[in-house]
Image (tube, rainbow, N blue to C red; front, side, top):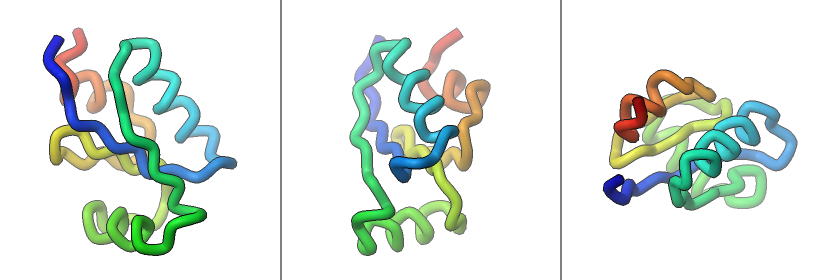
Length: 80
């Protein structure tokens, strides 16, 4: 499986963020986690990328997925 560049913009209290990160772990996908509750610059970066203020926002190789969307994440990661 090819390496993907994955960033998960999240907050510590978000249940959908946890589900998204668990999904990535189940498929052995390495990802960078950005806590937007602690990092205002990264929160702004997330809003600019997605147009959204809600989390999670998942960046997979430049494809922006808003929310925990297993189908879209699988498609972007090439998981069948």
